[in-house]
Image (cartoon, rainbow, N blue to C red; front, top):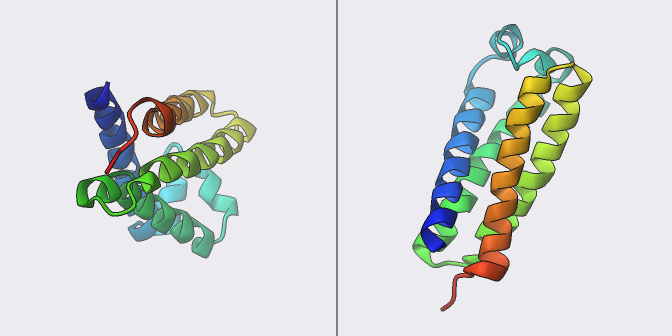
Length: 127
């Protein structure tokens, strides 16, 4: 079970890293021109970059606390924060009629629930 939770955690961290890098370093105009990035048209550049930075922090928060054995409970906390972020993403894409992206976000949400429950109740990190 521990291995499957780590795999889910790694997948989420990769998604968070990729999303964070794009939102932080790609200009808003380029993001808005891409499929899935249409939501950025009505968002301020600071908001988009802030989301990107939060996603970069999520990528680190999903992996580093456990690997470094410094407050490993933060892995579950980060997964819970990712759940909240995915609910917002699902609402945003749903309002734009991008139901395929809502489904993708639902998969990420399910992975985050699995990681959170896994690290809180099933296979918590113990010292």
